[in-house]
Length: 414
Image 1: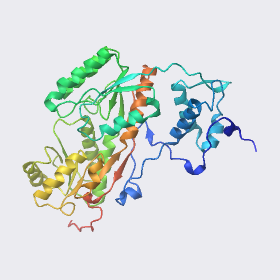
Image 2 (image 1 turned 135 degrees about the vertical axis):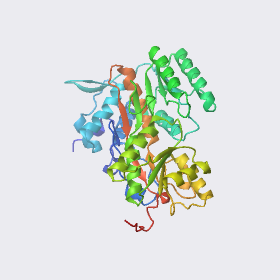
Image 3 (image 1 turned 45 degrees about the vertical axis):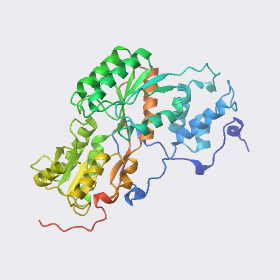
Image 4 (image 1 turned 180 degrees about the vertical axis):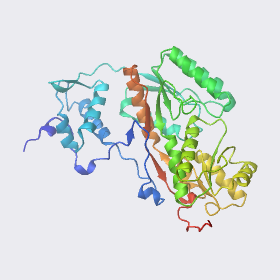
């Protein structure tokens, strides 16, 4: 039997090794809870996207010399047959090989391996004031570094920043340092919780723009919601997240859900509140009061005011950290979660399942956000004229004990 693929030096794969398609797409989309997540079980390890399998195999074959400079790669149809993948998936892998300078594609002559150029990678700066404080940014950075696209490039981590009052000055100093170092681009997570955050974020962006340094925003934009800046953003659809979690609380019996956040939060929180309000309206829960409040969920006096003024039966917190503190505060007030108060968070940080009452939350794939941020940066460096993009990854509702999904339905008087 003819074996053109094996002869090319590409390792063969069995059908069972195929992974699911990447959940990434450049649009506002989220995913409903999986059965495993809804049952409260642990999340499975994220499968390697199939295009990454193809990309890694081809790269390894080229770098180890199994496929030599000048050799022609199998056609996309042949690669699709080998990996049991669609033409779109195969084309994505081959396109990234082209972006790495490993192959060239010419109409009529196919895709051929290029001779190795001298290694010369980019140096990118990380400007993330919340690094080390917010759990999502460390896995995002790990996703950047582990991406095959980052293999020839370097990341400058800057330094640990101080408390909120110091972050503004230190963030601008780090920005100037990156400009002096003439980095190829900066991954920027705008400041939040600072009263002057808007001015500082705009000054940082303006300084990088003036220096001609591309910016990829991580997780959030610095422009007031729903406005957008002129820079690529990689994150999740926060409005949809707020909608889905609120809808979930309504579906399990909540009739007076409340959204709690901290003052001066990022625009992601504003978008989550917009989704929260939209879900209330869509399900006929049109309250006379504004059912969102700003305050510290660890402050018993604040929580008591919320309980007295709004009479909630469920509380959606802006993130898991706030939700964990809220559960402790409610416990101190003698209010049992979830029997007397349903609680959810957002992010699905590591400790969410380890809280005294395991937390229902919305999971975001931070490693994949990092990998996509690296791709967005390299795309931007290669072609500064590209349209500005919002690259939004799918999320998953993780149902645990805190939302009361397993409670017996309560009959409500009409």
